Length: 110
Image 1 (cartoon, helix red, strand yellow):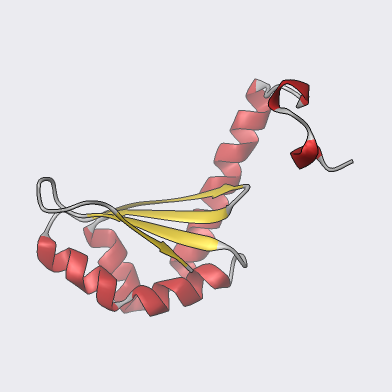
Image 2 (cartoon, helix red, strand yellow):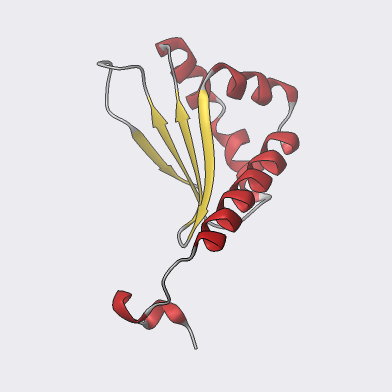
């Protein structure tokens, strides 16, 4: 039975061990993603806050850029970042948060 067709009330509830396994999965996937990136992309990631999560919609990479210049560097390297994400899953998206008061978050579906 495919649980995605069930209404939310009919889905099994999460238990603490499910949450722990989800966190562990996100940690492992994040490590795999980072280690698959080239050195230049790793340097870029280390300059900003980032988080990679798994979900029903695939992978979501959230990038938080502290400087406008860094936002532009990220945008220039989106193709490479997208290729590394595709190594881990078919569906992926990137959400880029620019520095405060400098613009709106950007969503890119890979």
